[in-house]
Image (cartoon, rainbow, N blue to C red; front, side, top):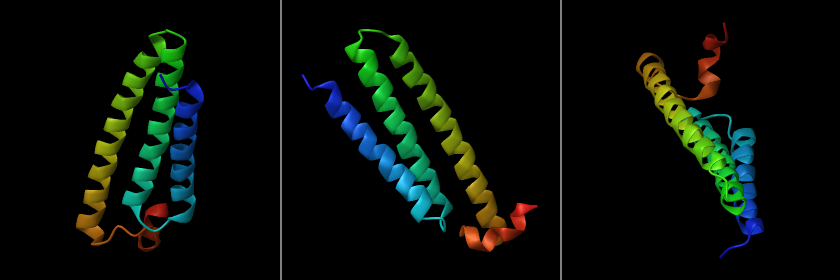
Length: 101
């Protein structure tokens, strides 16, 4: 059986990669979406690990809700990206400055 600290370490690394992905890559919308998904997965690992080690099901239920929200977010985000690509022929953020309002 793995220790709780191992799960927390993996989740911390995934969270850090996600945050670094957001701050370093501000050109491609798809990479930003994947970085956000990494952050959500890190949160899910923490919730599942604490749930398992505390013998409580509530954390696993939260993991289920976060997965549902992440799937909906990814579907809506990809739909928006496809719509933007159809109209602008690019998904680079720098070329989408007219969307600022």
